[in-house]
Amino acid sequence: MWLWMALGSALFLGLYDVAKKQSLKKNSVMMILLVTTFLTTLFMIPFFSKGSLTDHLYLILKAALVASAWIFGLYGIKHLPITTASTIKASRPMFVVLFSILIFGERLNAYQWIGVVLVILSMLLLSLSSKNEGIHFTRDKGVLYMALAVLSGVGSALLDKLILGWMEPLFVQSWCNLYITLIMAIVTFIMWLRDKESFQGLKWDWLLLVIAVFITISDFMYFNAVHAEGALLAVVSLLRRCNVIVTFVCGAILFKEKNLKAKSLDLAILLIGMVFLVLGSQ
Image (cartoon, rainbow, N blue to C red):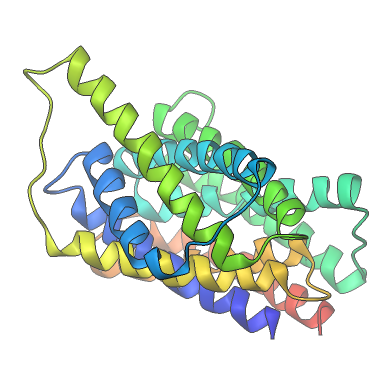
């Protein structure tokens, strides 16, 4: 069951990324993140429950990592084609795999290792095909933003494996949303103080509500997948990156992005890698 929860999370995560890209036409990065995290917190109000001080300190740390990943990730999406940004983001599980083995002692079988190698290969090929769009991975600021988002996301994923060992998924999701909202509010307020004249205020867009719904469903499935007995964080993280399929298709249809032929090969290799991961996890 945890495999299908991870894949379901990937579907809604992809729709979430596409909706965020579209919403950038009306609102700034910080306004989108602040409003959508606030809405997700409202959705989770019925599930708030008490916890220890230690629990909340861990959740505040997780919220800081998630907020960093979201901020850098959305700035990356702003400066890069979504097909490129989402595939870079798909590299995050590679680091999760490495640290899951080193820290949590997880072990992968032959099929899973084949999947890992293929996903890494797809990322290397993407870096080459992106040069045709004038994107150089070593010096493009959009790539830098996505790299910082990936590193923050890796820290968050590893922390998930730890805290979900004793915390319930809905407890983690509800309180994290609240803490992320507070962090986003503080960052937004500081940005407003620094540059009041050019600060872009909120322009209501119904996509903001859609974004909040998508990420709420995606996170619910993800936390429950990681929490499930026998679930491997390395595999869950890799399967969740199947969201790149959704963003790739929508990037081609909605945003008319270029260089799709070369990126299709990268995506195909990524998908084959995902198939091996699923086969190895049955």
